[in-house]
Image 1 (cartoon, helix red, strand yellow):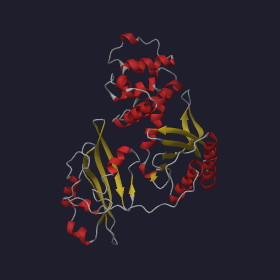
Image 2: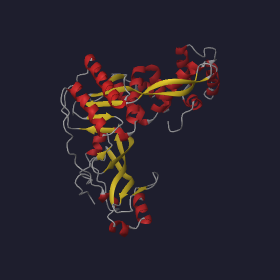
Image 3: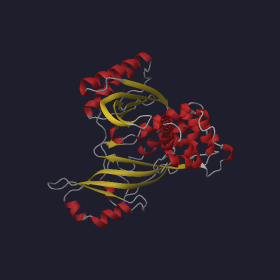
Image 4: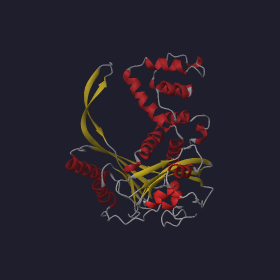
Length: 391
């Protein structure tokens, strides 16, 4: 949903018929006169819900929040992909509901396995892109994800984090298979212990010692050999967990990182540049949302120009020409070091906006999936890989 979650908003936007099913399954709110409720009577349901126990409301609210988060176009696409993978046809029943929130809540009620897996995958896709990295130098092969291997993986992760960071001495691993033969391993090592102020079921405030988990995620593409890893830490940490994964899951030694082709971005600072579309039926439009200029001289630094997201495509160039001295930038050797793009993809006859960034020398936060590959296929045409470009 576009707005901030509150339980009141959830009750207001979801269908009463779905709330009735939800509470009937839990054996709650049975005294409520559901047959006499009308469309605008959501507040009566909400008031009745507030009279339930703190524990019951907390349990419900975690799933209400998960449903609210998935009730966006991107979340629904993940749900459809997961349903298709499980051989479940949900498009017809979902067509009976007008809003995204009722659709997502129906899936939670009727297809819990699809919902829970879609929620995990959507949450992973929404994590900070800074910590997602892709390597494409591994062979395409079938990974070994047997019980014994997963047990060894868990122990190796625990051993590594405990020996290097004094945390992670417990770790759970969940394995999912995504469409396209993508194997996703969600690892949850234990974090440092902490003390938090929490309310118990009686509403009393107390200090509680807790040990949360942090995310370590591997996504291996069996068909292409691409490995996506989400891990917080520098190059040393990343290489360590990649080595563990390759040795245990792929049965091979981690190769040295290949030299990646660098990106060239300077030509994007000129108004005359045009994005040529190779397949307008799949990639409909492209615009630049922001440019970062580096001035490599003593006393200088970085300048970031960001256009109004609601403005015309040329707004970024209006800003450059109106507020920066072009001759001075050229004299001091300003270069473009980062560009944020916004593209419109067409998928199943519907438009989807994708935002991504390219940073020199060789970083791009697009993911390894068919939709993003459509964008990558344009990089040479746009001169991002060889600096030529179409002007």
